[in-house]
Length: 279
Length: 183
Image (cartoon, rainbow over all chains, first blue to last red; front, side, top):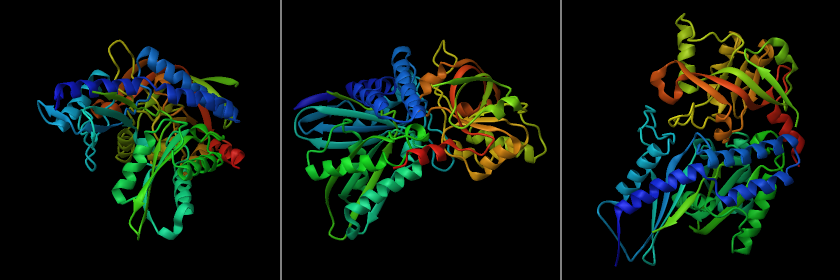
């Protein structure tokens, strides 16, 4: 059995959150660049150019891409042949977050729901762990801002509402958000499972590379259809009007109960910060 | 696109020339404040007190920056969602505040106040916190230091890139823009 010491996990998490907040991935950068040509509004084009300038400055001068450096969403895929030694996995992730947010001068945005008192170190991280075959640990971090997260929703549809019901919910959330979640947005849709898995699927959908379509032709067609519909709302970059309202839409689906049709919509801003590492 | 250069304090004749959809570069001093500071402003006024700075012809920026690393004036400093300040904004506009910078739609009450008292609402590009930080040349806490990232900070800015969202003529870029490109 392969042994991985928690110290290594702490160190990788620390670096990933700093990297994610300073360096926008090439995939996102390329997608925004391409969207400048697609955009018809001159104000929209100008906003998109600002986003490119912003990403370049963040990388070159080491300034966070956005001041909202997010809650520390962390996905762990732990190989079943890995033995984690030296302490608790959860504690290691939180220590990595604590160090990364301090060393990287990242904003601490975690607080008590009612008193609003800040926890001071951006913990607790939002941790999702999956046990997978193999002897590796894959860590993906997705620091997620509040502005876009506020426009997500989980709804238990009636099965008869079907695909049309899903489309209506996605458009309802995109329109409700308008300029607030910082368009051009990325939309993750989770369909099926139950109440909580639909939400998790929608977040996992956000982790797919921009421009990639689902392997399932039916889902791929739904993704295309949703993207087209969202870009017809007219919201545009920053909500100033235009045709680039979303950079992409990803859908993940799984079977659900015969009585249910759970659907979750998770919205991500254009500052789509995601980084991964394998131990 | 064409860019207008404007300065704080915002003079009424300058405000009247601004139209929704225009890009401007703003220079001068602006004041950051968000949720907690706004609540204190209005509580202070209700108790008959005075605001911690003279808001006559001034501009407020809805912003809670990331920490400034050593050697820098400020961290990333993009806008936060303005609607959370809608409950307080009309009162401040009625007292002489001439500009607000943020992101997202405003309430009808705020838009009415902008028209009545001749003030403007600017959008800074959300998520462009690094770019916006490059316009900031000085930073000085003027009130509520204990609020941390929510303290009121006087920022010296040069050519801060903004878009006019709501002008004094009742135009709203969020509405007109989306209407124009809706298919």
